[in-house]
Length: 227
Image 1 (cartoon, one colour):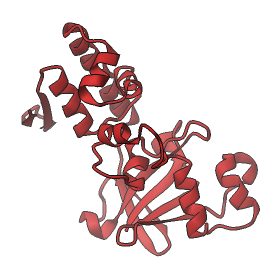
Image 2 (cartoon, one colour; image 1 turned 180 degrees about the horizontal axis):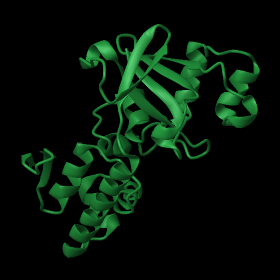
Image 3 (cartoon, one colour; image 1 turned 45 degrees about the horizontal axis):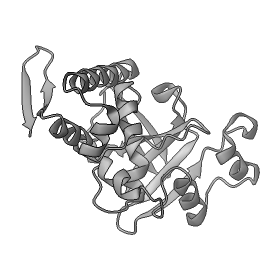
């Protein structure tokens, strides 16, 4: 089982969850529960309809419908390019949903994954936020949102500079890499959260290698080069 809080993407980690999205990996099914404290007048329309019915538990088909509204259809004429851009070999509703953190600009909602405490090895006194929902104690590591946004901006600047140095347009890079031009544009503007597969495809198309590093506070790092 995987667990996701449904939150306002404009507030991110400061946002109180509107509800929870559960994904059962064995059956590949979705299930949504809503917070009983929600005021229908203050939440997005995509969830308000269910709250107004006094229904805090969405039926499986309702949950799937909510998910499908946020991802490309398998019948989309560009679906093969979309899957490739997100490192997917076949149509995967969860993979597509998470490729953009479940973000849907019409309602400003996104997903924030949380983990059962027993799966993280977390013990008391750790800097993790904890909650209880349906008998499951779960936690997520507190991160500074501004640091994540800054990483996106830095990555965008690097890609833009590399593309300009190679004298390649976004359209040309799209053709070479298979990554949609809109995705390339969003990455360069610091608006996207691309997968490693997407970044590797862009790097190869520009004749570059991609380096990923995990750094300690003392600045010592473990680095992996992706050809």
